[in-house]
Image (cartoon, rainbow, N blue to C red):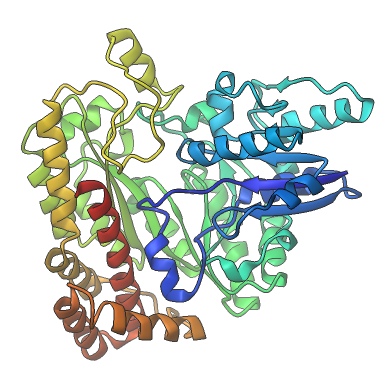
Length: 494
């Protein structure tokens, strides 16, 4: 059996880093971890190929080679997904589809031959069994939660790692919180399911043995969902692994802000190699946090918690949302002030949207305010429901937030603010590789000579070189990130 696995194109978005990866001669950020994991579940005697459309073109010849085409997808990839389906139909190749887009909206894809939905560990084996018997069904579903301790190591050999700026690993699924706007608990449940210590180390070993050295993102929606296991088993094992392997990876992940309440956990994460954590802050307005049931964030000094994380050696990337029913008109200025004062360099501010299955989606249906399915990109100025705030006021205020925080003056000021107070551990170091030197030269030309931010770029360049030389590579990286963020803002905000 010849099987072609296809990862659809991701459009230019805040998280695509499309304009940043070219500085390090890469095609895209992350490989398709889901497809690589599914590939490891397929029969070992099948011939497998993977085409990531974010890396290379998919030819008709390659589709004809395949006896069957597997495709995944998220909402943001829908346009590319439909193009892939149309091509496979025209070339008469059967398709198998799965992933969040198909699980949430399976009825919208009548041309797909087989829908393997929910978690592949549960539904893929049933499909494969029926395929062997010659009678595969069209739809496979499951209401159960998969045992992730049985999840195989991703098949890294299917990709060319040189095309990616980062690699990714999954440790857990699920989140103990149930924020109204989030569909994670619908997809993966509220009880975090975790891999075993030995299983996770096998994945780290496999990635190391594949030749990768550099950044690794643990894609968990809340890495600290099971703190006890992290502190007693996982992080001590990663610390030992890191020392034995001589620190080949720089780790980053997502976590709730109450990580700042646990000094032992923060220290262990930093010792294990974590340097970046994405935190869903959402709003500095307490009533909006209450409305969306963002429980870990309520009743706390959010700015103080961010500073605690930074002081412990963790760079905070922040997620923010405007468009809550409780948002006052003053929310835009408050948000700008919060982001600037905390020195959150990577601040993703999006308009509120309601994903299918979320409690927000259910509420808006009852209230008659839902308009359509969400685009999957909450920074493209689209909303899929009628907000309480005047829509023109909301969009105008949202535009002002983005145009302010990513204007060169404000952005570079925020970078310097962060670098002044950032307290990396004694073991912190950035191994300079050829790609870093390429990025330095390209940034000096593109940003320092031709960019409209050139004055701010050189100010940061020399300030960090003489004041915080240890963090100079980080300063250049932030300069490149800023270039990408401004391009995205300019594209959507005009």
